[in-house]
Amino acid sequence: MSPPTQLIESATEVARKAYSPYSKVCVGAALITKAGALYTGCNVENASYGLTICAERSAIFSGVAAEGASFRIRELAVIALKLEFPPCGACRQVIREFASADTKVWFLRGGEWTSLTVAELLPAGFSLA
Ligand code: ZN
Image (cartoon, rainbow, N blue to C red; front, side):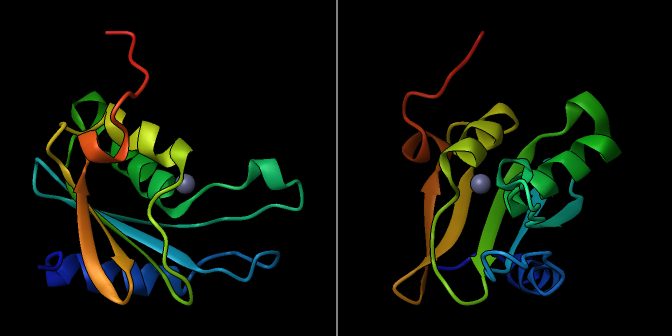
């Protein structure tokens, strides 16, 4: 199993635009919304490290800016050009805000595409609802 080709290609392409002079890790994320639109994002680092934003949140915030409060993720893929890792804890919480429990999140593990649902990624996520 792997994510749709469009997600892989878009995430890889946007990863090449990452601004990562400190970690040298270029990450790209691509997502398809329930409305059928595609949004991408890359990591943007800052000399004040805490201000850095991950690719996943960059893509999600672009989607919200375009679709507004109705923005919902159907499927998301993240790829780093030289490393493999799932979304960080901060991104998991933000993904959860705009996804369903069964929304698939794709990432590479051992050279293979792996998906976990949002519920698997963040089983006890924070919610005010
Ligand atoms: Zn993150």
